[in-house]
Amino acid sequence: MEKKAAFTIVAKNYIGLATILGESLKRHDPDVDFRIFVADEKVAEMPKLPGEVVFARDVLGYTEDEWTDMSFKYDLTAFCTSIKPACFKYLIGLGYEKLVYFDPDIFIFSSICGIYESLDRYAILLVPHIAGVHVDFKGEHAEETVLWEGTFNLGFCALRNSVEASLMLDWWEDRLKTQCFADVTGSQFYDQKWMTLLPGFFDADAVHVIRDLGVNLAPWNFFEREVFKAADGSWRVRWRNTSGNGDPVVFIHFAGYDYRALSEGKVERLRLYLKDYPDISEVLSEYQDALMADKETLRQYLGLPYTYNYYDNGDFVEKYHRKLYDGLVKQGRKIRHPFSAAKGSFWAALKRHGMISRRAVKADQYSDKTYPTYKRDKSRMNTLFKWAFRILGYDRFNLFTRALFNYAKPDHHFFLLENDPIEE
Image (cartoon, rainbow, N blue to C red):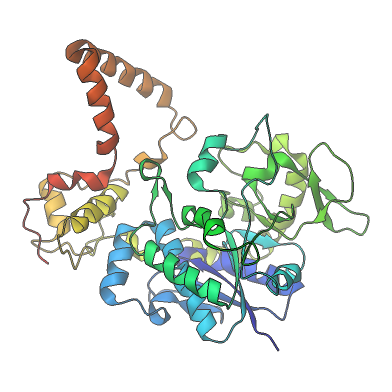
């Protein structure tokens, strides 16, 4: 009998969320083996772990230097996504022929057997963020954001053990060891943007794009898809402002919600206004019920800290530190113990230069949706740039602003520490 597996990747705090995903899968497809890969370290006070949990560091085969480098330079999201190809390869090594990856914030509403059946014909299955052409685009993000993030959403990916998948995984794993950042200036978006290249690499009988509306229904495509209940009580989905039977809802990607709040009966999410989508509120209630029913499991993990967020003295590793470290490494510096706060360490060099903050800096999340002072701050910056224009003049101001593109990348700030003695 052909072995089938599904898996997700989390830090310790999302183990409970991942088990809820696994339970929803088992409800519809009990013959599928489910695994939770944990890209984190064990701690003494950890609750009893479900049997499907696998600590990635123990099984994936990265060297100590590779694991340390990747866990330091990548934030939590980037690190979890960077090891995805290795997780696929590990499960293939255990004899699984068909494999599906799900993000942990997904909930299964009906059988995924159709996905496995598609793998009889295709080696790699992908799903697009948006499935329709919309002249009047009304998505959660601006349409150009999808250009940056990539055509396909890698909250889902399915593979069959095949020559094509093996070649793709080797290529993907190699790229993600060094290039798994979310960087709009570098046109990178975690593991996801790389998949935009796949249709150019393989024939159409190897790579297939699933356009079924019920596969990976998510906040970024709620605007084009309407969910409704069929006469038999099952959830179905169709294009908005149309009629017809539509497709079964296979799984929904509930990305960006506050899962603790959901388990307490509250709905909290930035950007998306659910009052505009009453149909989504109805189906969300089923996911919320599952979280509330298993809230003790969810909560016992949510408070666990992510190990790689901290230096060994407890100071927070800021994203700026991670990118600055990556810039130094790319310049040939060898920093073998980046999490160390000992004398002569990377942390010590940051400390000397006043780069250790007592609060988590989240400049990457700075926008009109997340900061109430955004408009005021932007107005002040505009005034500053007006003065710069008056001082520099048209030509030099133009050169100055073009140069800022390069300096917007923290990994290019290596010159700030290039002469500091950092022990290897």
